[in-house]
Amino acid sequence: MREDADAASAMGIDITTTKLIAFTLSAASGGLAGAIFATKLGTIFPHSFNLLISINALSLIIVGGIGSIPGVIVGAAALIGIPELLREFSEFRLLIYGAVLVIMMLVRPAGLWPSPITRREMQMDDMEPVGGQPPGPAPAPVEADPRTGSEQGEGGQND
Image 1 (tube, rainbow, N blue to C red):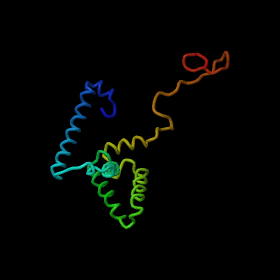
Image 2: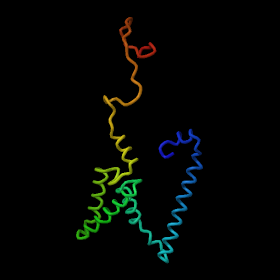
Image 3: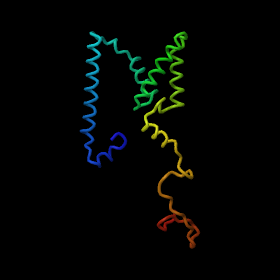
Image 4: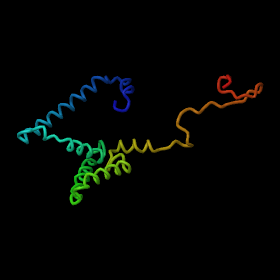
């Protein structure tokens, strides 16, 4: 359904209900995680939820590899380790951290340890068609009309 909603619908999957169930389950799991977090902490305040923490968590997932649990672990080790190694460069720590993120996204866009599905998708995008032509039907041959000398395409009309 994520890749092709029309194909899923043609196979008999109710798109609206499925998306609603997915949204409900994700909201319920987020609410449960928040309840556990509040119970562990005892008290929570709005400043407990800093934007930088959310950006860092998203960066861990992207750098490690979306859809790959081992990738997220490797991404967490890398992105938590880099600021600790750069602690002596406190003035430039976030600048170097951002530069490392940009370089990593240019060099490894699928992440450090991508899931097998993401790896296949990235390899399919990199493949070039044979002969430099995109896949699909070949263009109709163009023939010269012996009466006028002009070229005609398929169907006999002048182009």
